[in-house]
Length: 471
Image (cartoon, rainbow, N blue to C red; front, top):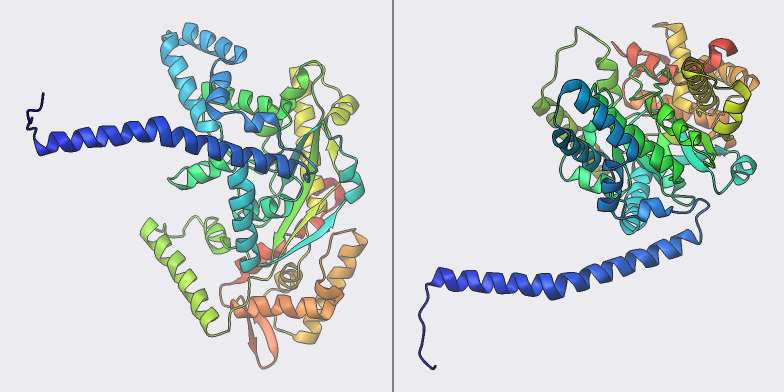
């Protein structure tokens, strides 16, 4: 009983490793999970007391439960059975495919990460880059929204900063669930994005089974009252104009109204504008079919060069934030009221009604897009072409545009309620970037920069269009 047994060193190390894992798995990890769940529960309880739109139980349900619920949804099972019979594919193969799609789409919302980490980062980043302003909000209309309704923020898409900016400004009201494109499905970014409640969307997928799974998730989330934020344009505006709506997600959401006793869906128009869009040059460049394709290495080089240049300006005390970033919230639109007014009697009428609702929502978004200083100054240059102009004449022309926009009930943000200051800030932003150059006291577009000026002018171009053709 007291004999010594010799074992190889590697085996002793393996035994110690397995023992340590057993202690970790049986004692430490359960305690850590309990502690984290308790912290999250406290955060949710505390935050829900001050949010206008509460965090729904659907968002707090464990991800694995939601994945199983989506995978074995009755309508998904019917779609699998139909495709299995039509294409002679084993049902098990299709079910495995559905499970992969569900796992890809379903988020892993974590209230602690969203409000304690994500909201803090969003605020710091947004305020570091821009002078962030909440320009207008229809407070009475927003306060009148039925708390039991499913709320969807409908926004124009100017920049990938939109996600950060709106999440920051809405954090005092609710937690938003975004539909995010495939660009964000890279490690470790996708893990963070999922924990913030976002779900991934393959926007141009031709896989009918994938589209069915996505449709059911969006309908389930909408029916459960999850507060969502969507970009009907389907992608970033490349020329600055508002784009026609794509109806996929909108159609999926409206299907949640088809069940008896379903909650109303309330769409809240959100207009966003920037004095500087971080991706502006790459967006405008993508419109040129003859432009040379840039490699990933070149893009990374330019990105880090841009960051380094701005850090150098900070060190020298010559760095200005990228102007103003402004968000406006418009009056809500009830989906149920819209449908009752327009009627949906068959599939064709339904498609036409959804299409009409999409156009109406984009029009309402256009009505609350903020008019910022850079947009005003850029519009003057876009209309005059290469003709030089003095600062005084430039401000007179911009002020005339402002007066015209006010008559059209545009939402104009004037910093410090001082028009002269606002126009000076807009001109300074353009000259610092060399989009506008000064020579002998006269200002003119920089060489080859007219497309960039038109891009910023297009952000408010819809205000000058006839009402029946407005976005």
